[in-house]
Amino acid sequence: MTHHSDLEAGINLPTIPAPVVLASAREPVRFANQARLRMQKRKPEVHPPRMAQASGQAEQFFKTLRAELGNGSREHCLFVCWENEVNDQRAVPLLIDDRDDEVSVYQDLVEIWYKRYGWWWKCIPFYEVQGVDEVKFRFLRKQENGFSVIIERLDIPGIKARLTSDLEDASAKLCTMMAREPYSTCKQVKSTGYWVHEREDCLGYEPFAETCYFQIELDSQRKLDRLELLSLPLQCFHDPKKAAAPRTLQGLAQESCIYRILEIRDNDYFVERVAEAKFRAIMIHAGFRRWRPFDIPTVAMIIVMLWKVSGGTWEAAFASAGLFIMLVSLPPRMRKYL
Image (cartoon, rainbow, N blue to C red):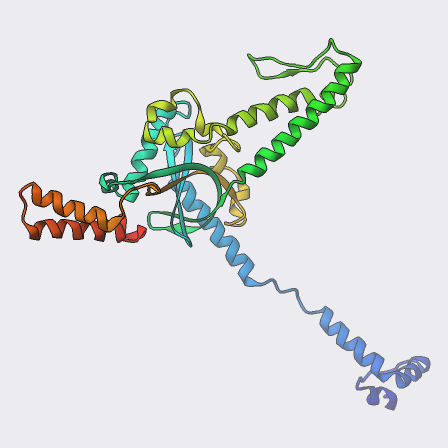
């Protein structure tokens, strides 16, 4: 039996009990809405294909990165960054044989820098490497001779302020503790680096097992002392022999910039998103000295006069000066081809 009320509601339901039929007659819109809701529930969830595509691209990128790190013949690596232009920042991995031999590491660093930047820049008057700094960076994509990255410079004043605050807080806590019991302290065993916690009110004492104030005070003071050595990497770049003892690549303002390659090759985190992985690196800055007494045209005229005085022709003198101006005016991306 077909009920007219159901036909008016737009639904053909055979043999429906009278109470339900009456209710459907009174509320035709309600049944129509329920039918539409049931249709909506049946729709499968559709995930944007871009997410899967991005994940696949990230996985392929880190496979390429691992390939750049070699087949395991070297155990450690150091990432070297530089800036060609404001929106063109690059990084390359420097493979390391012995992380403790920083003299050799700096020699390799100088070699890889001038190999990519151009050895002839060493002959340009008043032009030199002016900074070798610790930074953090994120990968963007693979380029022909390296990787495009986003460089994040460290906030050295902020780091120093935080360490100073931690040192002052720990010292204040220790003064209160030592006033109660002045003859008991926590000590670090120099041979192993482990801490021995003897005070029962120390955070490192069981069952607390946290970082105690003695350790916080000593670590904060050591890190503040390391911040005073931030100029050493630049000196070691110009004279690698100075790197025999300071261990400047083991971290001055942050953790060590030298990675174990296995950390990168075997870490699953790095295959999720390319730009989510943050790395530590050394960034090299190069340019003309700010205090240079001559600008580029003046240096070009000096080249002309020296060339003429040495017996050359005017044509050759001006040609050499023009070559100098052309070389220093080239964009950084063109220098690697020279």
